[in-house]
Image 1 (tube, helix red, strand yellow):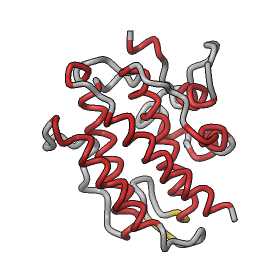
Image 2 (cartoon, one colour):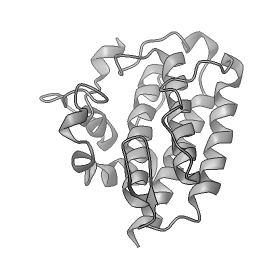
Image 3 (cartoon, helix red, strand yellow):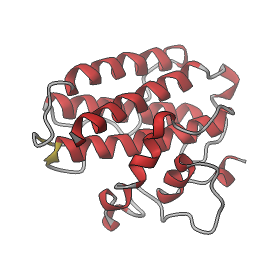
Image 4 (cartoon, one colour):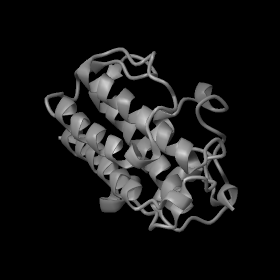
Length: 192
């Protein structure tokens, strides 16, 4: 019964980010985020790219040609594009079983491990977005607590410095979501 909860966590993470995107004011698109590589606009493009990869993974379609950051969506359509992708992901992932083999961008694995990876990525960047636009930054429903139970195991050292920064240590965390963000190398200090 682990997979149904994990899949629901992924869906809930997508819903949370959808709500955050709907709250963005146009003047906030150029704001810095805790993710050093992104302002709000490019973070949204990355979240859309990640959602496209999540959808492709659920559909059994190769992900290698999906850009890391989607740049061809107009500012006015960023939130609605992400919302449509989230709905499509729910449809594509609902028939999957825990042990089904899928191929996310990081390689062949079970649907459970893929859902875990996409959930961690979505929650962490959701935190980045919430901090950048001044929204509550704790993911709903205990998702981040559950992510913390496995996140360190699914982030291989070979991806540190490539996809993820070194963990942030020695800083206070206001929530499990912030603790997860610190694990992936994100900190509020970068958005100031």
